[in-house]
Length: 110
Image (cartoon, rainbow, N blue to C red):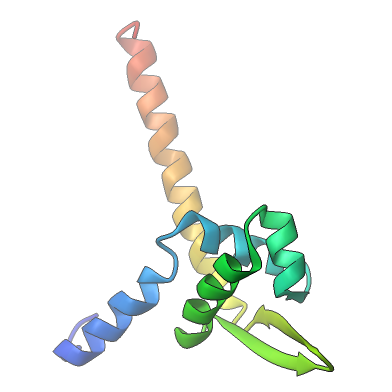
């Protein structure tokens, strides 16, 4: 992030914002295995199509997912698979933090 302009930092922050909502993470996880329609994602997530569409719009705007019209449906897919490397890195870090917390609590009999 060295030498980034203010505008570039705002774009980076907006990109990371796409990962700040659990529903969007669930959508990304579902798209990991295959492309899906809004209806499929809504059913699998347990939310309305309108809710899922709103999240997909943000993910599309940020360049995380891509959409493609197929007949009367719109199909969503991951635009850049490296997003999973980022998510895995963060998840691994959180897991390590959790393990340290558990060890500390065990050491103090909590």
